[in-house]
Length: 100
Image 1: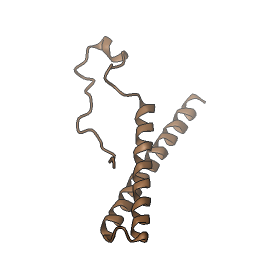
Image 2: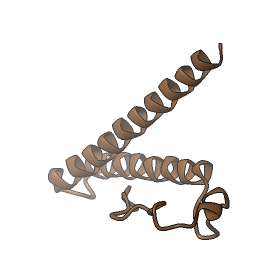
Image 3: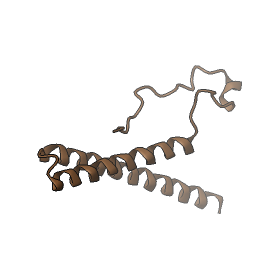
C-alpha cells in the first residue's frame, strides 16, 4: 500500500542564476504527472480500504482496528484530493476573471 507523502524540502529558486529560472529542471516532475500519481495513490488507498472491509465481512480478518485505519487513510487522502481540486478550480476561476 502506498501512502501519500509530501516532500520535506522544496526546491529553492533563490540560489539559481537569473537565466536558469526559465529552464525546467531535468529532475523535476511535471504537475500533471504528479497529480496523476496522487490520483493513483488515492485510488490504491480506496481499494485497500474496500479490501479490508471485504476481508472483515468474510471473516478472514478479525481485527476491526486495521480495517478502520485503512478506511480512515482512504478518507483522509480523498479529502486532501478534493481540497487540492477545489484550490485548482479556484485558481483557474481567478485567472479567468483577471483576463476579462
